[in-house]
Amino acid sequence: MRALSIPGAWVVEPAVSGDHRGTFHELFRAETFEAVTDEATVVYLCSTGYAPGHEHGVHPFDPELGIAWPDGPGPPVLSAKDRRAPSLTEARARGLLPSYRRCAQLRPAGRATGPATRTSPSGGTGQP
Image (tube, rainbow, N blue to C red; front, top):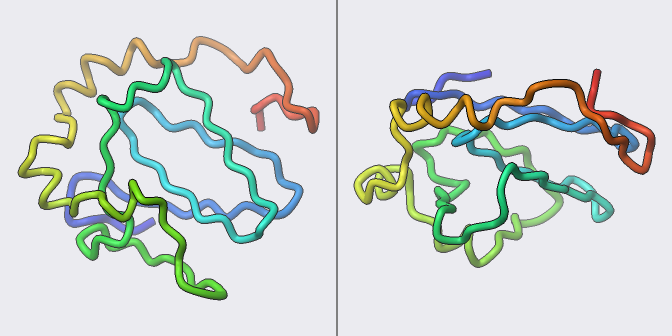
């Protein structure tokens, strides 16, 4: 883990082929994924329905983020949304980043209350 020049940090969690673990991202935490195989699948489970007006992004290659993306076999393929995303400085100036106070107010509503109750097709439950 490496500290950013902003409050927060990033961490790399490499997935291994056949490893069906999941990761939990609390409310207002950002996440990004890099598929390292053509067969990779990423599935999101959200606490509420998709609301495009509530979603904001920061360009994943913004140098201010300081993410050391691994080298791939070719140039990265970004979605149109990611290509249009503002830099961290632009997002901050436009008021798109959540405040600590707002996160603290909403966090209790998004907290899990117990272990997973459903299993994945591979038999995993989301528990270690």
